[in-house]
Each structure stands twice: as structure tokens, then as C-alpha cells.
Image: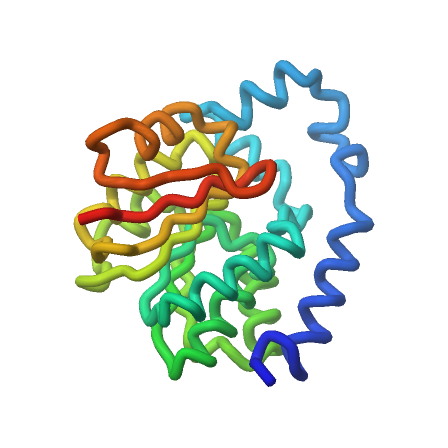
Amino acid sequence: MSTLTTAPLAGLIGRLFDEADKVTWADNPAIANLSQEDHARLMQSKTEYLGFYGALKDMPLPVSRETGALLYMLARSTKARVIVEFGTSFGISTLHLAAALRDNGGGTLITSEFEPSKVIRARENLIAGGVIDLVEIREGDALKTLASNLPERIDLVLLDGAKALYPDVLALLESRLRPGALIIADNADYSPEYMARVRSAGSGYLSVPFSEDVELSMRLA
């Protein structure tokens, strides 16, 4: 028995994934006709991310089912008590992480989302899942919301917002990462700067690709 696999969370997460499966990029007229080159450019831009992700405000943009399960397992197995998430969207990944905190005996999950309508949806889902008491949603640009008032010690980080900002968000959190802290970066291949940072010798991280689009890194010291 676990919070993740029992009511109310199990049914809620299943429904949210099913709903997300029905939404495609082609359904969004603002981005449906983008070329692959323009899409890749916008995904990696440090100056156009607000407009790009603003156009995606009605899209759930979840982690995969497998990545969701991975997040729960990593947070449980490391007995994480303090988690920071960049990119809340509708809260699917947040629900997985909060479930792990519940089963670890409690803790705090700080998550940042700049799109107000997504903050509303995520909060509704966290309330429905019975884990809102574990989560602090910070609304706004993560470069500001995660720049202050952070816990002294962070056990686990999920990066799943604007990909070009991964190195900048990591820099904000780095001094708080405990030795052995895990950083999971979804779609990290869209951030070559981030990949170079965590994979470089002497960076203070041990980092490996996990599945097709997830980079799993550990803070060494």
C-alpha cells in the first residue's frame, strides 16, 4: 500500500494522464504550424520562453507515466523530505513527488509555475489528491521565485520547465543541495548547456542519461 497506488491519488493520476494523452501539439493553433527548427529554437531560447510556454497554457505537458513512477521511487528510496520542482504545469509530477513525501513521513515540496491558469489547475489537483498540505506553489518566473527563501537543505530537484533555464535554476539551488541529492531533468537534451554542466569532469555531479529524455544527476559534495 502506498499513497501513489491507492485512492484518491491513483485514480486522479490515471485520469490526468488519460486526459493528457488526448492533447497533441496539433490541437494548439499557436504552435501547430511551427517547423521542427522553430520548435527546437523556442525550446532552447532564453529570451522567448515566456511567450512560448504562455502559448501552451492549456496543454498539460506532463512527464511520462514511467518518469512519474521514477520520481516517486527516487524520492522514496532516498527518504527525501525537501523537494524543489521547476515547472508545475497541471501538477502530475507534483502529485508523484508529494505522494513520496507523504509516504516518507512528511516534508515540503516547493514548486514554481509562471502561468496563473496552470497554478489554479495544479492546486485543484493537489487538493483532490489530498497532498496540498505538503506543497508550496510559487507563482511567477522561477528565476525570481526560486531565488530566495529556500530551505537550507534540498534532497531532490525536478527540472521540467523552460529547458534553456535549467543551468540557471540549478545555479540558484546548488548551494542548498545536500551531498547525494538527486536532480532529474526532463527533456534535458534541449539544454546542451545544462548537459555540459552536469557531465563535465570536476563539476561536482555524477550524471547519466536515463531513458530517452531524462538526465539523472547526483550532487557529489
